[in-house]
Amino acid sequence: MIIAGNLKCNHTRASFQNYAMALNDGLRDICHNFTLLDNIQNFNSNKANFNSIIVFPPSVAFVEASACKYFSQGAQNFYPCDSGSFTGEVGANMLDEFGVNVVLIGHSERRGLGENDELIKAKFNFAKQKGYKIIFCVGEDDITYMNASAKEFLSDELSGIDLNYEKLIIAYEPIFAIGTGVSAKTQYIAEILEYLRSLSNAPLLYGGSVNCQNINEISSLKHCDGVLVGSASWDVQNFINLINIATKDQK
Image (cartoon, rainbow, N blue to C red; front, side):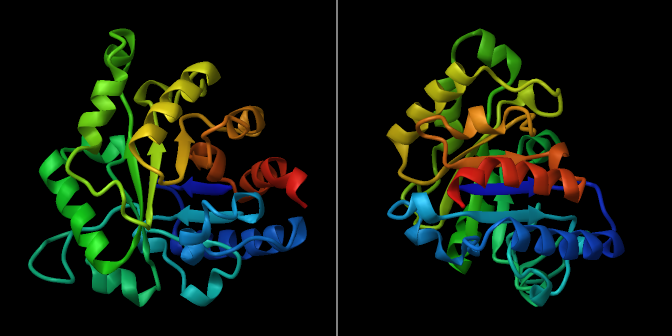
């Protein structure tokens, strides 16, 4: 199972250093079969014994790679460049300094801030060139959902990217469930994940108001390989509790 926590615009470097230490301690105490995402190519052949934790802090809060003993540190955002005249952006050289090789692309909140398909595809191609692990986010809004045209919408969001990239993970995050506290119905999640599985063999995550109360029901769905957690990951102890619930049968 892949469990990713998106801290969004929360935590300073000082508070994330404490977070990282607490998370390492918590994962060590839960069990000993957590693996870093570097082995993602082995995921499909070893799902039963594959547990990987990823945390996406703000870029200003990155910790040294040595501080990430039992989890991988990822980038919420980056610009498709090594460095250059791109005011306010984060380039690959900055990620490399902290050993970051997992990136989030296409999150609805980034799309909402103006990232169009052209930029998103440029990010994907750059990350693929760098050999990064990519969590590529897709998800429909409530109007698309009510019009029963989600599958066509998701297909469009995935068009133009390499769905066979061996380091790709697809995260399905329906916009109408993000930050609302109410997850999509499990039957609907299962239907969408089955459709996404027909398009790609990449691991599939669900995101959208995942919490300690619904993690087991969601993660038990046939094509669900893990979750992308938002606010339930911001407090490290709550995130540890969620991970413990999700992996307790695998000890």
